[in-house]
Length: 435
Picture 1 (cartoon, helix red, strand yellow):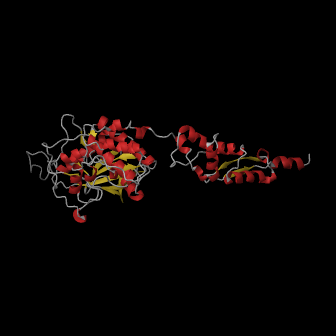
Picture 2 (tube, rainbow, N blue to C red):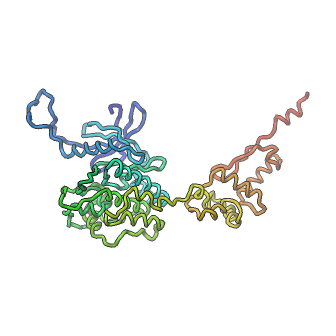
Picture 3 (cartoon, rainbow, N blue to C red):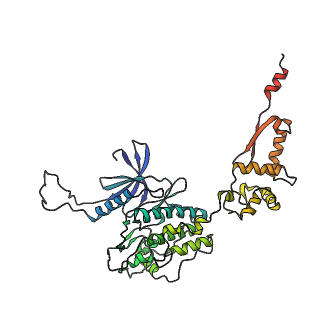
C-alpha cells in the first residue's frame, strides 16, 4: 500500500467519502482511492509510555463510524466477481481511512444517464444482465445484501461492462433474522425497506429548498419491532435503475426534492407497477421484466437469479441477425435491391430469421465481399457506390480484367472500395531487356 500515491483528481463524491484517482508507482497502474473521514477523538490503545495506564481496565472503544468502515472493508474482502469492483487493501490517512480498489475508467452509470438522457434498449439489457449477475453472486454465494443499488453505484468499463461498487451500507444475510434498518437512497428504496422503520417522517413538504439529489439515507432507528426485509429489496432497486436507464427519469418521486416526500410516495403508491412513458422505446418484454421487479410483496418478487432467465434477457437476436439490419452501411440502392429480391443477400437472411433490430446497422468484411460478389453477378441495377467501384477497377491501367493487372482490394470503413493495383512491371521490363 505504501507504493500507492493518491492524486488530487476526484472520481466521485459519495455520502461517506470522496473517491480519488491513485497511482501504483511499483506496478505502474491506476487505482481508485476512497477516502473516508474519521475522527476517533485522538484516543488510541496505548502500548506503554506516556498515558500507558490512563484507562487500565477498559479496552479500546471503537466508534460507530470506525465500525462501519471495518464492516465495509470486511464485506469487500469477501467478494470476487467480474461485475463487482475488486478490493485491493486499506490504510490510515491523515484524515481517516483510505480504501484502495479497482479503477474503472468509464465513469458511473449515473453520469452516462445525465449526459445521454436515456439509453437504447439493447444497452439497457446488457447493463441489466451484468447487474443481475453481480447481485445473484452477492445474494447466493457471498450472502450479502447490497442495500443501495442505484446508477451512481454502478461503474462502466471501457468495453461496456458494469461493476457494482460502494458496500458502505451492505450487510451480511442472516437467514434467522431479517434486516430492519432503513438505509439506502430514497428514490430507489423498496416499500418494505421504508416500512421497516415505523417512524417514517410525516413532513412531506416538497418545496425546492427541502433538499434533494442522490444521497444515502440512514434511519437512526434499528427498529426490531418493525417489519423486516430481505435481498428482494435489491431487486426492487434494480428495477428502478433499469426504468431510469430506458426512460431517463425515476419512476417514484422523480420530481420531488424532499426525501421524506419520496418515501411517503413509495409506501402510499397503490397504482401498481409504473408504466413506461409513451415516448419510451421500451419493448413489452422490458415492461414485463419491470413488472416483476416492482411486485409489492417481496415474498412474490423474483430473485436476481430467477430474473436472469427472463425472456427479455434470453430472447436476444443473434449477432448475425443484428449485423444484417436494414440500413446497414447506408447503401441506398442495396437496401432497395435486397427488398425487391427473394434470393440471396442480407435481405433474404432477415426474411428467414425474422425482422432485424434497426438499431444495429453494421456489416463485417465477409458480409461486404459476399454481398458485392452477388451484386456483380446480377443483371439488375447496382447501387451507385458499387457501380462506381467496379468502373474504377475496370479502368485501372486500361485493363478490364482485374485478375490480369490488379491483385485485389478491400472495402474501407466508410464504404468505398480501395483497389490494390499491382502492375506486372517485372515481366514487362524483362521482355525488353536484351538477352
